[in-house]
Length: 98
Image (cartoon, rainbow, N blue to C red):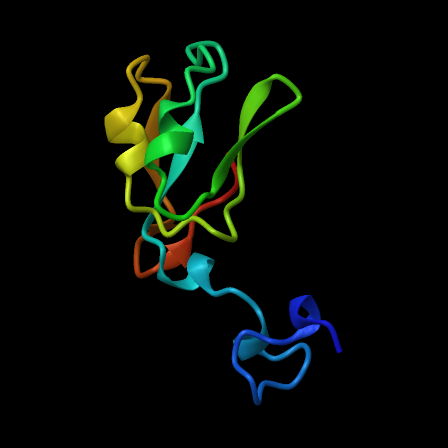
């Protein structure tokens, strides 16, 4: 079995919650990128501690499965193209898609 096929928790059964990344269960906010404001300066990529941002197809893309919602990308963006939006609302109920 290749290392990339191993679960995050060594004894986890495939398909179990422990076999997948759990950022969406702990993240309280997430970045929203305004593509009109973004000038592709790559500052967000430089500062993101989780490497959750990448340039693809001429725009910044966010991999939510890696993002923990720290907000560093939003604070460091000189164009103010990134804002943090709530991941949850109310009694921890999920917010609908944007």
